[in-house]
Structure formats: structure tokens, C-alpha cells
Picture 1 (cartoon, helix red, strand yellow):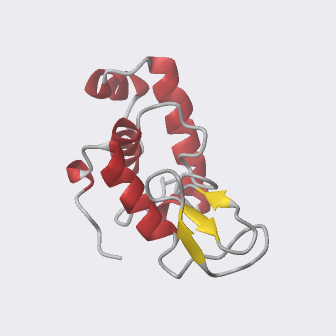
Picture 2 (cartoon, rainbow, N blue to C red; picture 1 turned 90 degrees about the vertical axis):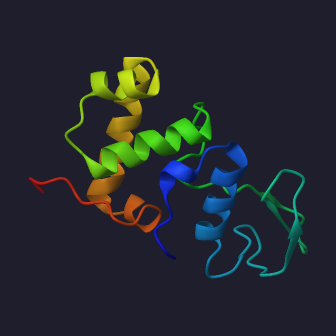
Picture 3 (cartoon, rainbow, N blue to C red; picture 1 turned 45 degrees about the vertical axis):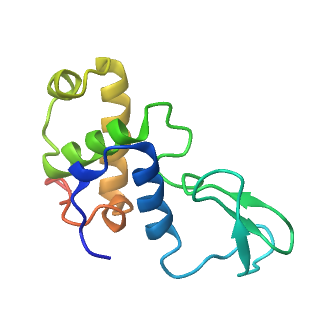
Length: 132
């Protein structure tokens, strides 16, 4: 998938579409029964298995699962940390108008995912922090 301009992901719907496209780029597979056929779910960009009726959100089982921050700001934070792993929580807090503790927790989570390489599949162009 081409590296989109993450700054262009301005609204919740664009972020959900991006996550759905990346998550199911190789096709949908139900985590519960393994079926590959689906229909649209109740929420935007979610998918419902046609066999067991389990619905899966594009957020489920991703970095953004249980994230209480609005998606566009969460995306911006992730992108800022990926592009500059040394950015301070104070800088993040000032740029995004988010509490420092929230920035610290999310930055820590992003860096943990960067060390394992899990975020790089969602955000091309990122680099692993040095020292590993």
C-alpha cells in the first residue's frame, strides 16, 4: 500500500477507512470461525462474518483498540513519534493539545510497537529507534 499523507487524515471516517484498507488488504478472515465471506457491519467500515455473524471493527486487534483519544489526533501522535522517536511528551502535548500523561502513555505504546516492528506495517516510512 502506498504511503498516504497522514496529515490528510482529518476525520474519524478517513482514519477508519485507512485502517480497514490496511487491516484487510489481503482479504477478510473471521477470527472466530475462519470464514472469508462478510457483509457490511453496523458501524462504518466494520465487517460481519456471514457464517457466525461476528462483527469486527477496523480498530479491533490494532494499536488503536481501546484508544480513548479521537482517531485523527491519535494518528497524528503516532506519526509524530514514528518520524521523530526522540520527541518529548511536552512537545507532543503542546502540538496536539493533549495532556502530557496521555502523550506519555501513547508514546510509550508506540515505541514498544516500533521496537517489535508492528507499527511499520501500518505507517510506512517510520524508523526503529536507535539503540536496539
